[in-house]
Each structure stands twice: as structure tokens, then as C-alpha cells.
Image 1 (cartoon, rainbow, N blue to C red):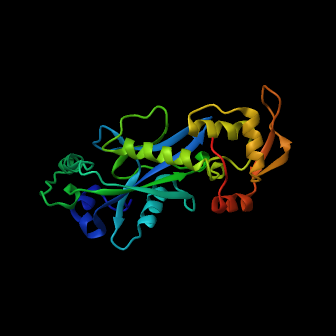
Image 2: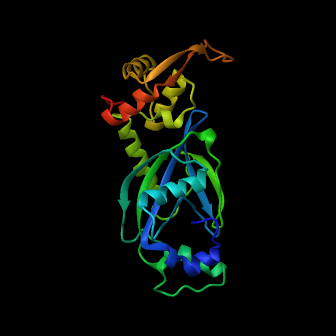
Image 3: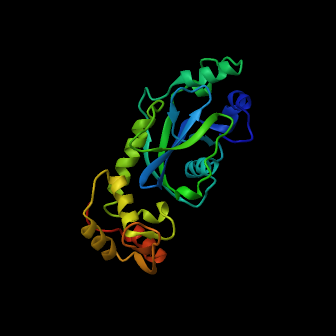
Amino acid sequence: MRDDHSIREFLLEGDRMYMPSLSVDCVIFGFHEGQLKVLLLKGKTMKDWSLPGGFIGKKEGVDDAAARVLKQRTGLDQIFLHQFRLFGEPDRSDAGVHRNRAKKNQITLKQDHWLLQRFLTVGYYALVEYSFVDARTDDLSDACEWHDVEALPPLMMDHEHIFRSALELLRQHLNYMPVGYNLLPDRFTMPELQKLYESILGKKLDRRNFQRRMISFGILKRLKEKRKGLPYRAPYEYSFDKKKYERALIDGLFGGW
């Protein structure tokens, strides 16, 4: 949804701007205070929360539409974005959502209105550095907030299914591709990296085995500095070797967690 169009204009003229029957929904993951989080929206007149999503402009690529949604909701661009699945169950669309929104604006939608038709949606997941995100609402939403992945509020339509599918795929990706560069700050400790992996996988990992495996991948650089101000023995700080990290995204890693 473009910020420069009001709700009323969207309802009355959206069919001239957007593709019919096709949308994008984005599962935006972040990591903060040892917890994997997902960015959710609370739409105006909506009881349940939703994933950030939107419609595809008639002269816009599908990936471009997803990138636009991410930019509008996070203020970020040039971030990791992966298209992972098309969701198209016959009963996934909820025409009542749009009818209620139109009613609030004194508009009656005809049965053949484009928003009342069956919609397929293209699912994406994105990995973002939590501290860089400027979570934003628009004309159609009251809230845009982070939630722990283990404590989600009720989600509309099939959005929980989309979220679960994205999380499962992210877990699979950990077996053959690195992910930390997009979720962690530039400098981090090995315990922080391990906590990220544990939060994604939903299970504890052996500290020594984890450290040995991560170092064996050759994508980390141990820095001279140690993390100060901690109540326990100061751990070394690390950063990712960007060139080797990008090569690992292409060539892959080996072994499962």
C-alpha cells in the first residue's frame, strides 16, 4: 500500500494501480536480546495481526513489490530477501476484511470488486538487523511492532501458516548457508552467535561443538578486542569476513544442526 494514497482512494481506485488476485506477504525476522523476532502489523478495523504485505503494481515486478513493502515497513533497502513459496488455498482470502474497511469509510463494495476476489500471495522472508529498523505504520495500520516468534498474537487468514513455513525454511537454510550477517551487529561474541542459532532452531546447542563448527566454516574473523562490562569472563568479539560470507552463500556450507 503506497503511503501517498488514502484508504478511500485505495478502495475506489486500487484496481487501476494493482494486479488483480495476486499479492506479496513478507516474514521479516530480527534478533534482539537473545530472541528471534518477527515484525507484525495491526490493521485499522482489524481484530487480528498480520504479516507486512501489499499488492503488486501493474508495472512492477513481484520482487520489487516485496522490496517496496520492506522499505515502507522498516525504512531499509538492500537487505536479504528470499522468495520461498506461493500460497493459494481456495479459502485463504477473507472478503470480510475489505468489506469492513470499506464500510468504515462509507463505501459499499460490489460483488465483483477486485478486493473481494480470490487472492494468491507470494511469500518472502527477510533477515534484518533489529537496531536498524524504523518500524512504520501507514494509512491502513495502527501498529507495526516486533513480536517474539514463540509468543505470536492471533494472525489473520493464513498468515500463521505463512510464518511457520518461513521459519521452517530458515531452519533448513541453516544447514547449508550462513545467516548471521543479516541479523547481528557488525561486532558480536560467539555466545551471541550461538544464541541466534538456538533461537532459530528452537533448541540448545553444545557450546564447544558450535564454536568449532562455526570457525571451521572460515567466515568469521576473531578481533583483538574482548567484550567488556560482562559479569563473566570476557569473550572475544568477532565479525564476518564479508567476501568469504558472500562466497558461502553461493557455494554453501556443509552439515546439519
